[in-house]
Image 1: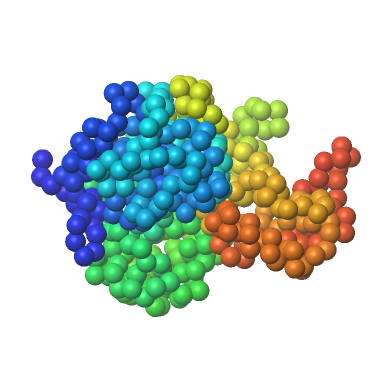
Image 2 (image 1 turned 30 degrees about the horizontal axis):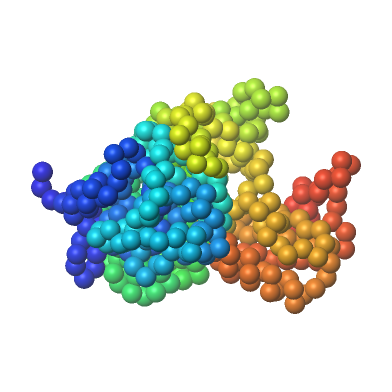
Length: 470
């Protein structure tokens, strides 16, 4: 088989099918005879992508973690799961909890003197369940889950071996992992970049490398609008014909604007909906359906089905608003909160209650209306509102609710201390690795409660929504 470039690395040292095969062989010599857990701390570097593809092929069960995770969060994860092999970018020292770790001779791969952490033979990838990647709770994905979703996305987005896209999203984020997998599966090319879309060099590089597709979360598109994407950025990349969006709800007016911009040059914007638990995409709205289906996230991917459950848990008729239930071969095996969970098989049976509310039209197109779970999506990252509450150094009662804009959280506090609010906001944003201005602490003399004494989150959400309409 001829050698194929999988990741273009500007300046040389591309990642090819041959370099991946060599790294697979090197890793296999280090891994135990049985399938074992490997921690991979990810950044946007050549070695990270090479080690990710090699670990996927080795094969082993790879827990993808942000290399920027603080030692205070990473240390307990290592202590709990005791991975024997940890792969880290150059210069990333391990926390003291890791103990002694020797260099293996394979770049970035460290080996600890502990027994291998055994896993179920089907387990392939572990992803964290929220933006705070220090949580011990992982989503357990099998290779079958990933392969089915990868093939379905390649088909839905029509990715071919002629496509080129930059590495804009991290591998530890399910959307970023999915992009890497789909482009490799299609024989297309990833372009390694550490530049941001706000840097002029990013657009110059995209033009020179003939990038055909860009992917982003809602905050990406908000930034591109501010930068005048249509007039100033897009003309620099004549080859760009596809935009894809996932990771949270994008405002309909932005969907329409970017769709019209791409249509004007013969291109398309694809809107997708997903969850990490689904490896990670559930639906796709073809670009041709815009603007007629504005507000929809599309239909279920190949081999998947979507149903809407009413309050009684039964499937409702067309147009009924209820919880979204997805069935498909990409649904995770289950969760893991302790090492013993890694040995479990599939406990979900291809069925996922998403915790999101929505309805189907008469042609099966899904429209999302809200959430049943206390989860917010901030710049594409899922963040537990309960976890944010727990992180606040409380002087009283707090209540965290998602901002109706869809990309922020407001924490109501029943004590008034502006200096504390500013300092605490900075600390929590830093610990959760969230963008600036996506968290606000606000004084409220009395936080409303329900008759049962629980916090009235719905009332607080309604108050925020009312403010936005004034």
